[in-house]
Amino acid sequence: EPEVTQTPSHQVTQMGQEVILRCVPISNHLYFYWYRQILGQKVEFLVSFYNNEISEKSEIFDDQFSVERPDGSNFTLKIRSTKLEDSAMYFCASTPGELFFGEGSRLTVL
Amino acid sequence: QKEVEQNSGPLSVPEGAIASLNCTYSDRGSQSFFWYRQYSGKSPELIMFIYSNGDKEDGRFTAQLNKASQYVSLLIRDSQPSDSATYLCAVNPYGGSQGNLIFGKGTKLSVKP
Image 1: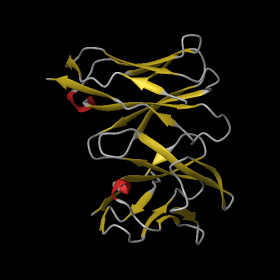
Image 2: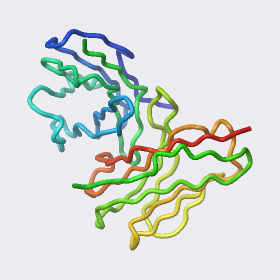
Image 3: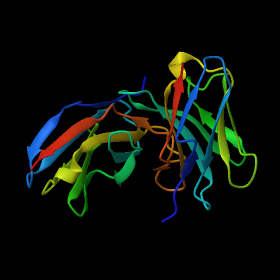
């Protein structure tokens, strides 16, 4: 069964460092998403991406965040200057139809 | 502020019983509703979706939607210990693309052997 794959599974970084999280969505899907889940909290929408541009973004997705589809398969989330409160699980997902999540990337900011 | 509310639990049921999970949402214009299961440390896994008022059954799972009451529920029949997880209710209040969802905080279900 096709799946969304994410790397790395866990990344530890120092506050202020740049982080790039990578995702390979399911190949015939057209809409791509990033969500995050702070430990013990809700899953929160960050951004959706369609046709090589951002289609929607939440208040969380400020200027420190960016997304890119650098080639035909990868979809990346960049955090320019990480803060302690960016520590969370970051989930990539894709559609059409219902939302399928990858296994997540755990980001720990020290 | 668009909200999805769930009782955080834990909800404890004996093996073989029916587990009933409930969810309310604030945006009356919401069109699509989803139940996800999340095991500890894992990603959400889609169980069911429902778009129309009434019941929708899939195996041991039944989703129920009442748009007038802004209420969605999930029934799990013949609960198994492997059903022990957190169940997330999610709503798309925006229409259009299906993926911009608002999630509830989840209800933790524990099925005792």
